Image 1 (cartoon, rainbow, N blue to C red):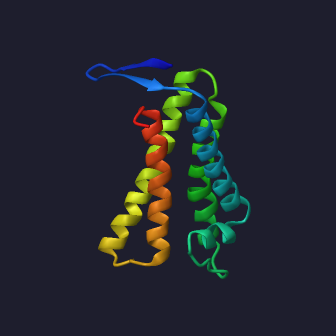
Image 2: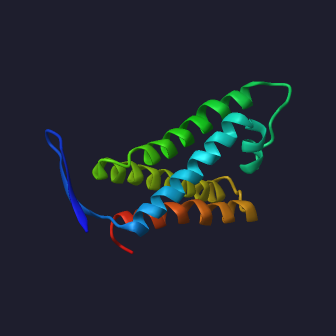
Length: 147
């Protein structure tokens, strides 16, 4: 079952059919929940959030914890919560899920770029690229009806 979504600006027209169904809804829910949990961990326990990302917090400076709580946690919580809250109408939920998928995919692409440019070829970075780009690609492929 598909829903036709329309977005029209002055010079831009956009129209495509987004698939729905229980599998798409479950994947959206799980990815949104994972994103929200990572955000909450970074908000409540910023040192743990940094360790998940393989970063070392500097106990002498509060800047790192502030960045973790503000920037990292804020974006993750906003992305995850948006997808969990917009269960109705269907179209808003699907567009929020596309944004979530793009965020994860671009996180993986950015990390891959860092592997090449910054010479950060570590096992953790390769695993993180597969994980982040994989989640984003899977969700995006489901939303666009490619799977």
